Image 1 (cartoon, rainbow, N blue to C red):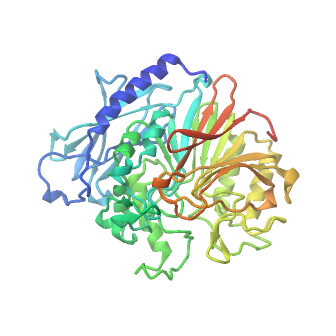
Image 2: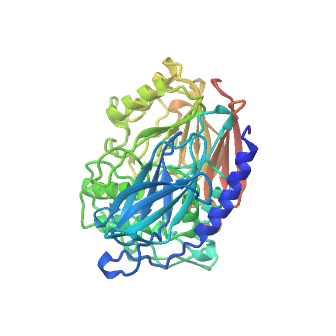
Image 3: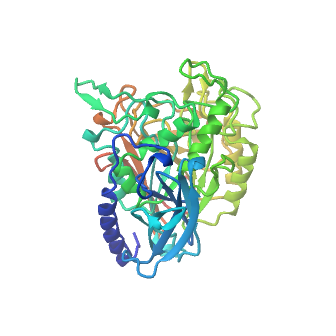
Length: 524
């Protein structure tokens, strides 16, 4: 890969130093969300820092305080912080669960940015807590730098939470060591519908022990319970260290609210006292906005998840929202369907932005797979594919419309990345094998979970001609992290050739499958 060797070595040194600083951020088993009036001393940022939606000249820094505080960010070109630039952020308080974000603008392109977040007493700005350090690299406008990123999803699901004996969320430490430019979280950042028990008996008779907080002992219904699910994940040292060094692109899927939800749904689940999913989704969206470094979201739950992130001449990342605009889950056999999983407005936006993109590669970050049949109960379908290999029906009609647009506008370099199904696989879609033929061949790659139950592979739907050259999945449902089957993917785009190398990886540093894609080619 044609990266500047000095830059890479310099960044590795940064990562080592920041890792040591971040490792010092230790939290108790149960992090208090105590009211500010019950606390003494100086403001504390025990939940670490995050950076998101980084561009050539900007980034969004996130922090959480343990009490009302003024957020201050200092940036510098070196770890010594000589002549730092200071950014005054918001006063964080109970209205946002003491979280805050500060936009850094006017940063130099392709540069390593060192930053530290200070939390100051609003009544006495001289009283600040210990700074929390991080680093990130702004996007380079020069092609030769190349791009490397990792992606996955599904964290703390199916009863598998933070187990210190297992190394906690140890897969994040492995991904950090791969030195990515950013992490694409493909959804299921939390499992709001997944309570945790203190212990789980494993098939071999041993015991998996979870760290448990009060909010994680039941399904999330109140705003505070949704917030608590996000705070729970930040108890993990490896995740906080990862966040301090790797920018994130966040999207959501179903478990930020509850399994397989759709707008307008009314629950029959006895665990819930609030049956209106729209009410739950509004609370979940607010918590997601508060705990994610996403510029298009605001803590009042307005704004949108779908957006495009531009990473120089080589890459544009199109982040989709397959939850907030979808139609109701059904058998998916309708001969007409305009809503699909994206809704009409988001589909029009995606077509328009894909047509405008001049990047070599257009990664479509979709929180649901396309050709895998994902069921919802015994008759309904959760995803796009519905198991009928014939002409498009139901939500497949919207996908057919999009794929036709990509072909007719001669948009090249589209690659789909997703998680959701809790195993890893590669699918190649080709009209020569398909019932619907008016599209250009493309690839879809699936990865995950990060730390959750793994599940057997799903069947393929032949409507768009998928072929699966690789899949790794367990033979039974809800296989826990102690037995393996925890996955992430890596994408490496070479600055000289423009080639994209996709690797499907398993926790333990094993590369399971590699595919090299050449720019501008159709049907590869």
